[in-house]
Image (cartoon, rainbow, N blue to C red; front, side):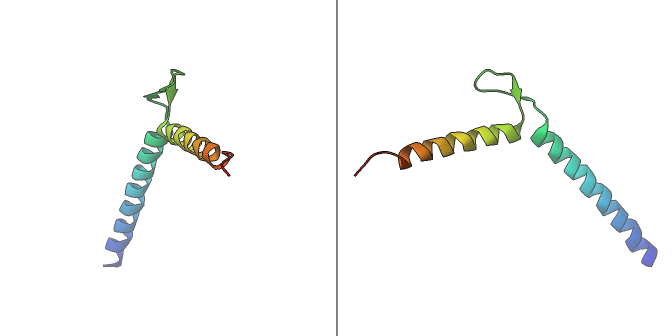
Length: 67
């Protein structure tokens, strides 16, 4: 019975490695067209650009000279 658990543990590690490799490829390989026309971007970089736009907008509102 002990050998069965070791084989299943090895299969789980393999499945985990395949899932991590797939997610890494999807997130970090540039295959999405840049909305600004600058070539291709990864999904991760699109999230970074969106966060940068959000932070810049937030900073603009916070620094308004409203008494």
